Length: 158
Image (cartoon, rainbow, N blue to C red; front, side, top):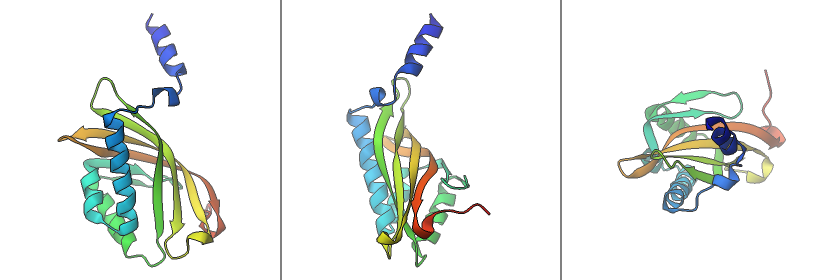
């Protein structure tokens, strides 16, 4: 019986499990705020979205960034870079756990140069885990995969 239930759950597509409820709407709003904060160099809003023990695995070389302070330093360094990339995450699906105050967000991301957005791009897929912390949905973990690029933003393997 358990095997049948697990098989049924595994066969159900992610899209079939996407949520349109209040929690999913709050997570999408947090994602929009995070995207705006990246574009506007707003470190305070980014800090408000991240959990203290947040984990980020970068898309191209799987660089690992552990905890809120590390990520805030990465963003702060990025914000003073002259030829920085502005990243946008576009959620396709938010799936809220029926058991725990957790959710998964699946989507695509794209990065373009702030100074010359038409010069190329780097893009891919991501998954983000959210946790309801002190009444707010906050990022717990993000994993990115680089899948496409154009121009000199295409990564090279050294």
